[in-house]
Amino acid sequence: MDFTFQVLNNTREIFNKIIDNNSLEDLNKIPNGFNNNIIWNIGHIVVSEQLLAYRLSGLDSMLSDEMINKYRKDTKPEGNVFQGEVNQIKALLFSTIEKTKEDYNNGLFETYNEYTVSTTGNTLTNIDEALQFVVVHEGLHYGYVLALLKAIKN
Image 1 (cartoon, rainbow, N blue to C red):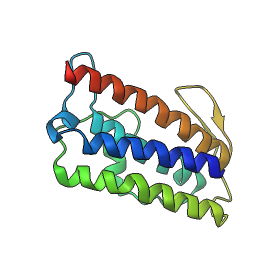
Image 2: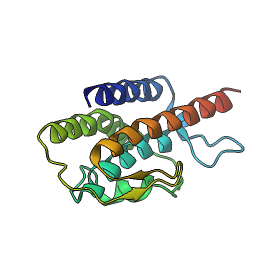
Image 3: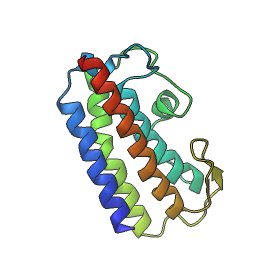
Image 4: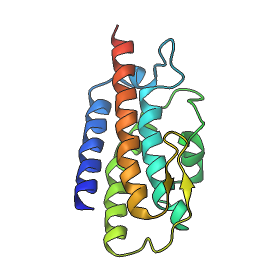
């Protein structure tokens, strides 16, 4: 599982650089043909990892219900995000993965409630499968963010 956490950390570093290299306006921009923005996608990957790892294991996540409800599956941006929230998402990129790795290594994820993923149809039955899917999910959203970046720079 070390490799999985290494990939997640590297992907999160890419998202961190995207935040650093774009204005607040660009992070919030929803180009024509899209239904969300860069910062929503980054908030969404943070929330999704916590839901797939913790909630489906019957454990509390590190996130507030407000954040979960704002960035979970089937949501979209309801307005612009301010710099304070961007900073919070940025900090959570790494603190959540570090905590998940620590809890994983300490054997905290003992049970798992099966969940069938809507995007691929795969059924997650344990924490290892969930974390492997999180890698795929974050890769999908990285691709979406790249498309958003291209659309807002044109």
